[in-house]
Image (cartoon, rainbow, N blue to C red; front, side, top):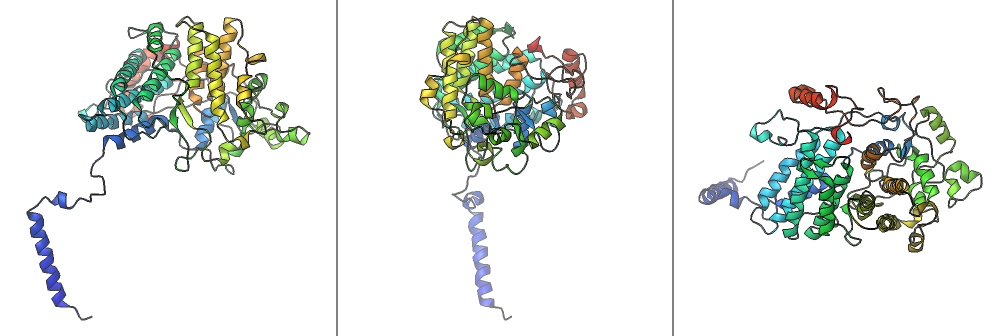
Length: 510
């Protein structure tokens, strides 16, 4: 091919001229695309931080089923018996701690801006939430030295659970104060859209949950649990009926973990008799939103709106027996909305319904003054109103409406007269509330109060060292044995007689 040397010479002159021009100016400035971000901003980091503490953290839909199997919501009749259903759990991990550098950078980039206080509040809450979950799973954990790899701290010490919890309560108090001074901030994917007033209320609501969860202890690191609880309630900056929830809406971009999995494992998820039978006792229409009628009952002539068409499984029976019962359509399956809808009900991390039930318990325990019955009814109404927003096409012709909510408190749902019965009502409503939401909270609650009574069968239990009991904790990450052995051994000796085992009792439960 004949080349056009005249054009080549012209191009060479152009290139040399361009390099001359660049040598006299800021190369990076000229080379920057004004439409592309050149650095990570506080708002982008805030989005990441919020998603880390509000988005479902499991790997996939199967992990959501496993989460619900441990506290006896569901049974699993597919690939083989699920460990969690039969009281076996393994190790947790410290991966949540990787949020710390993002929190630090978010605050660094926000310094001097009008939104700085809000970002500091967000950072304090996110740290508190992350470490609360970790310590509740394992006990003593790295805290004061966590996230200091950049400073050369690679083998971090384990702080006592008491000192970790004190730090968590201090962080939540600081978050309250920051949000009190805060401005609306950018990068918030939750329904709060960066509103510091709503965030402040959610932070304080979460603090009440933490305090109730550790309520067996009179004080934590010098903080009186009962007094701190009462101070937060007295200040009045907690969730009200109009504040909504802290969490995430599901959407086509953020699909429900079970969405589209109907032909995989989830279509064989059966609902437990523990959940089904208690919903029946309460004449609770949430049963129609949680479950499908048992096929054998429909074949026998019952309608999908008939409570008796819903049959749960004893999740502790032998797997082969349960699997056979499923094959014969004896049990109610998971409601199809979870499998078919991209955006069924949102994931609520902090909710008005749970807060009100916690307040009802606090009144009964003498932590605060007030009317326990009013708090109980307020919490249940809020929970029912949340379910009422779900697509009514999946309500088996028995939708929840306002008239039903207003008339709910009759029979078993009416507030009882004895203290123990009242507490059990509150605990049962919190249990129902967390179905397909934050099932780990139900595990923590069972550990705290032993209610509802979970079915446990020594003949089928995979909990080798306690066939008649549920595990009490997760194991420490296996990597700690290799990379942080000395600190791990010290923590095990201090808490668990030197033995990392799932039935060991952590400090808050003693």
